[in-house]
Amino acid sequence: MSIKEMVYFVGAGPGAEDLITVRGMELLKKADVIIYAGSLVNPKLLEYADKTCIIHNSAYMTLEEVIGVTAEAEKEGKTTVRLHTGDPCLYGAIREQMEELSKKKIPYEVCPGVSSFCGAAASLQAEYTLPGVSQSVVITRMAGRTPVPQRESIVSFAAHKATMVIFLSTGMLGQLSRELIQGGYEKDQSAAIVYKATWPEERILRCTVGTLEETAKREGIYKTALIIVGDILNGLKEYSRLYAPEFTTEYRKGRSPS
Ligand code: SAH
Image (cartoon, rainbow, N blue to C red; front, side):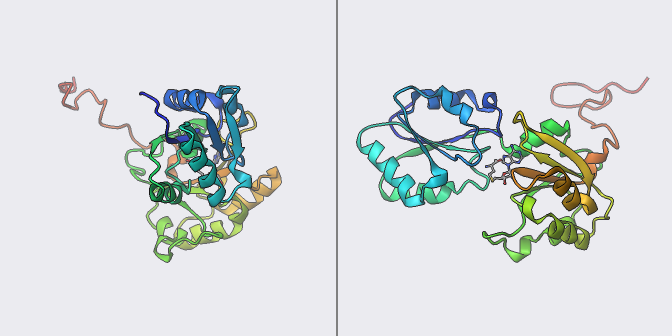
């Protein structure tokens, strides 16, 4: 891609510095200004930046300040990278930044990243969509300072028994357990806590819906974790049809079983 003097929202990936996309890395190399989400982005990614690049940590900034820095850079014909953890489309608060940039007629593009829910699956060596087990993934969170619409309650999602990946809720695991159970999960339903997936200090804790809180407490985990719930954690029930010898696809003619 040709890199222009504009604003790029870039997904930093889940943690490991080599899990950013090639495009994201090129953008970091080219950036005149980087505003990174310091609370979650691996600072090692900033080593891709040029020595002359001006770097801001958005953890200490308001939306107004972020937009101010970006607008200033734009005026000077510079390239700004707004570096968000994982993929910016999930809990990234990017839409509000886009609105403000649009108001100022500042152009922007998005470069996707590997979300932490994918990083966690890799660490767990899990497949979220197993035949005969679950074919859907619910990505959600407990209500915190940001409310969650009532119709999207954990209780209502739990009733589906689809794979659930719960963000931003590590400080509320007792309540999360209660809501999962209220929704229909058994106490001994398999669950996992993945702390800092793909970082060097990653921890994978397999537990149950009923022991989420005590497991996290015992391990001293209060943030930067994902909770995964569902039968997919119990392993495979049946193989997919896709690679079965007798299954005909657009590319391969099925053989009748001998
Ligand atoms: N856009 C990000 C999510 C930002 S919200 C993404 O796509 O991953 C921040 C929350 O994401 C954290 O509270 C935590 O629940 C989760 N998170 C981010 N990085 C993580 C990681 N490496 N391991 C586990 N959870 C992570």
